[in-house]
Length: 179
Image 1 (cartoon, helix red, strand yellow):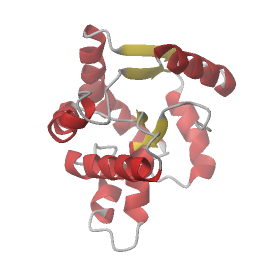
Image 2 (image 1 turned 90 degrees about the vertical axis):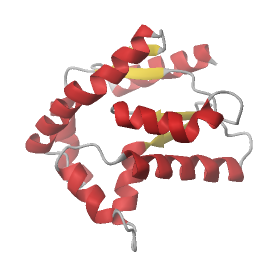
Image 3 (image 1 turned 135 degrees about the vertical axis):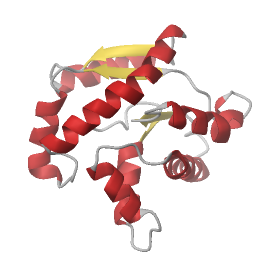
Image 4 (image 1 turned 180 degrees about the vertical axis):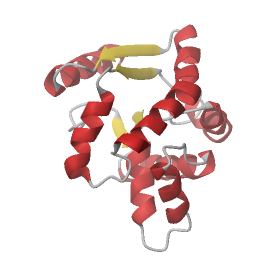
């Protein structure tokens, strides 16, 4: 998916973790690998530091790029507390990053799509066993975070069960509307 036409910079927590997992000399590579294969959430300190580093590098390269669409984070209460602890000054509007809300892609066909993606992605977590663990993790840990933001009126939902182009058009329209 090409997010370049949208004003926020897209950062995928999962992509950052997978890149760190394979980076030569990474002190966390094996740990990240185990967590991903087991369908568990990587410790917040690792994910936060990768996100923070990517945000800082992006803003150093281009000061106009200070809006981020962070994909796949926070995934549990620990992630949320870690974000608030590390990024509060930056995400509160006093610094350079402002929290705008949650974009929730509601989809009932996620297992089938991930299994299809797994045929060519090379991802170790695109298999039925890992996906079933990930769904349990989602239900127990991530869904409560989404519900928290829903109660605050900060969730924007897009039906992701349709075609990629339709979903992308909806996301683009939503981000444009939200400013």
